[in-house]
Image (cartoon, rainbow, N blue to C red; front, top):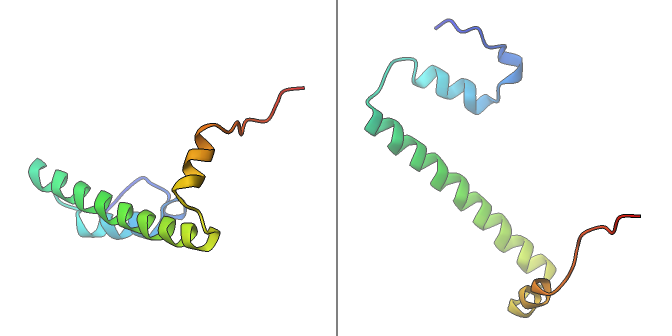
Length: 76
């Protein structure tokens, strides 16, 4: 497979996917693969957020507090 993309700027995941899918696949399969990847990364984020919430001891009350808090840096 020959590409014009500099491989030093691509992640190992991108390179592996290029190797796996160097041929055309039907649009339906492409959409399914996109969904699988999105679901996988969403699960990773959920896992990391659960861990963060446990580490910080955050609760539903903390969410309510955030709703009324202002986190923007005031301009001087």
